[in-house]
Image (cartoon, rainbow, N blue to C red):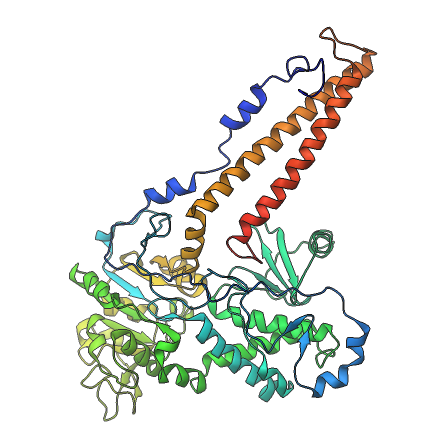
Length: 565
């Protein structure tokens, strides 16, 4: 209005109180950095987390949106020829989509950045540690933190081999490479359409990719909002990528979707059938104790991050009077190899020294069934010669299992006197061996929302802690000076947009009143044309604000991940 002679804010009835009210009366935006600083923990000397290392600065692969007729004409060639570029992407080349995310080469860090993650423990409920009698840990992705760039790639390669050997896929797909940074946890797979989705808390699809092709806002709306059926985004049509183990299968699925769309060897399979093949192949790779576990056992340092302070932290818990137990789904042979590496032994050296830190060790627990079925049989791990698994030497060459009988008539001392290493069993057996009266005396630390946290809390009343390694990267980004400046600028743009929208509404109401009453000029001297000019000007300002806000929000999200935000 200042650019129009004869018009000012008071003349048009636009005092500054509206904008001021927007700035002071909201509460929509929280001061995240202040909240985080109040949560700084002084709990342990161990700072147990992953560094967000940047292994590459190469941009995310971008794919074209159309399937060409030439591609369809090359079906026979695709079935027999080696892999080449698919939709603009060469699956044989190693790529990384982001620098700084959890995925990539990961190391321990000293938390010297005072603006970033400092090893805090975040709580959504108070917990009195005096009431905790036992603290338990999962092994995979909790005590043993796997390197995505090596371990997930190993799983990916094993799944490719199984697709070829078990599902009849062409052999040239074994040349495909895996990008450990492309996908993140929390996404959803639309099995029937071949899409990967990012939902917000209200189940609104914010981002969607078909294979490696990004869907437009209109395409997302047609698929998920304008359909006659409400999408619940649950099984069996959808699959949540809720574990780090699930990221390789999502990337492999996107590769196969791209090949199908090009008219390749998968044209006769549905997207759902392709997902089934991929899922079965990846699951079989994880459950196989052949090549996958053997490769890790040969050189654990290549696949697992070792924290030199781990066992000292566990000893600290024991010194404070808590019992410590290990509860993992991995079988005993593999558990023993991994825990020996975490202890500090060289590859191939297996001793029982690490076992001294734990009061009870249960491998092959079959969670979440462990928490709900109290009839599952408990087995004692025996070594060659019939000795219990925690006796001298710790070797597993002749490991065997023996049924533990008569548990209902035994006390925990009688059960543990013959050894503390078991396989299988159920929660009732564990409660008895820990000598706890209720689940609220147990704190369990794991990485899986459903297998480790929800089921044990809901059915048994265990207190739970969840390891989320990606938070290190996200908190570091959120607390960085650049992100703080961008966040503040975005917040001001939201206020500015709201103020401009209020401005437009007030102008429009006054103009409509003047037109309805036939008033050409108000007492202050402003005419209908003046109001129309002011409306046009503020609408132009609002359009500019919306464009700047959209661009800034997009850039802010890309600071966390260039594809998924």
